[in-house]
Amino acid sequence: MSRFPYVASLVFAGTLGLSAMAPALASFATPTLATPAEIAQNTDDDPLIREYWRKSYAGDAEAQRILGAALSYDYAEDGEIDDDEHFTITRLLECAALQGDQIAIDQLQSIDADFDISETGECYYTGAGYTADDPKPADPTSGTFDEDALRDAAMNGDPAAQFALAEYLESQFLFFDAFEEAEGWYNCAAKQGYAPAIAVLAEGDAIATYPASEPCPFTNRTMDANGKITERFASSPIETEPAPAPAPAPASEPAAIAPAPDTEPLFADALAAYYGNGVPQDFTRAMELARKAADQNHAGAINLIGVMYLNGSGVAPDATEAAYHYRRAADLGDVSAMVNLADCYLHGIGVDVSLPRAREWYEKAASNGDAYAQYNLSAIYQSGAEGIEPDPVLARKWMKLAAENGDPDAPYYYGHFLEYGIGGPEDPAGAIAWYQKAVELDDTNGFAAMGRMHYYGEYTTEDLELAWYYLSIAAARDHVEAKTWIEVAAPSVTYEQRTRAAAQVTKYLAEKGAQ
Image (cartoon, rainbow, N blue to C red; front, side, top):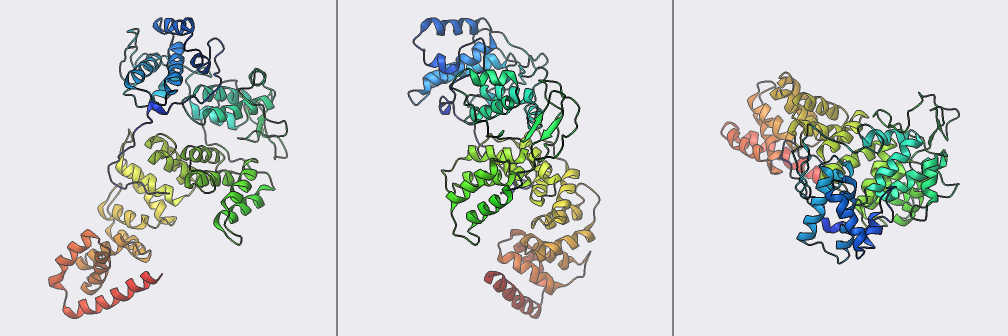
């Protein structure tokens, strides 16, 4: 985990280059058009390519998007996509995106393309376009498309939502793990007897049919024809309102799904092998045990798999795999996974940088009492960025909770909020209690603040010897402001006061250094 850069500007990583778009799928869920892979395998077939170009010039958004993808397959064959090829692919995707094709819009966010769907646009090949006031969104489930809401419905066992999500993910052929996840959701829907999913699995070998004994890899919930949800490990159905298909259920917090009763020992053994607690450290063994528990939807085990992929523990490092497993575990209610996923969005680890998505997952973890998430959420609201307006009231609220819940850096910052009246009334006297808490936690900022307070003595006792003690510890740790205050205080502090304070500083730093 890493701290949000508190009260600092953000520098975001660049987007994925188009040359990384190697073929990832063998099929594409489009009933009327050939698949990108099929087109790419027939690039010398002029009539086929001409037909797609004809449809693209005629303004067919789906043909524009698929042709752009097919050309990326072809161009990537020689290992590099040159500027002219990049231009052709990007312009085709833009033409589709400007007609509201959501898949093309998403793809443009993952490649090095200067495209803003909020602006008025014009297709390079047809001259047609639309403005932000007249969008035409493509929607795999009818109505306004909301992937998170669709996921919520799929996690709740709705087979129609599972199928729609699978179709959407399969269309994301420029993203590395989308096909694997789509395959899983097709199988989840088929296991509930959903005819369209069964038909997809029966069409060929591109999408594997999981063994009958293998459960849905994402959720243990199923929904009957009356809309009742049943958990496989629950003793009785969960009564719900019948859900309209295939529209997704309203967005909500995903319910944590209970793992199978026998997965806790597996997870405990996986952790022991990972950390070497009581047994030799063995990452391969840890991964094997974690996967067994993860197969039964143990959220902690799924999160551990993500950690191992991120750190390269027993497997090749793979940030994309890590983010994928964090999302699975977070959807199952694991708070640590929510934090890890938020970190991924904050720093672009395995996913595109997105401060709004980072905020979303920090907020979910923070609402579950995670102090680290509360701290980072406060910092986001304090700084603001990427369309998020600074909100000092919310920043103060979350920093207070972080301080109360044990985050080691939060007491000083919450004291800072109180002393200067950020996000609420000034309370310098209340700030001192939190600065003192920061000192007890060995926070250098806390020592600097307490030294300044005791030098002035306005809200606590004036004590130059104690001020010198606090400031000296902070200065010894290169706290810039403490060094300045040392110079300010020096004329007022006697030789005897300095000597006594220095002895205590030496003792304190030696004790901390020995720990």
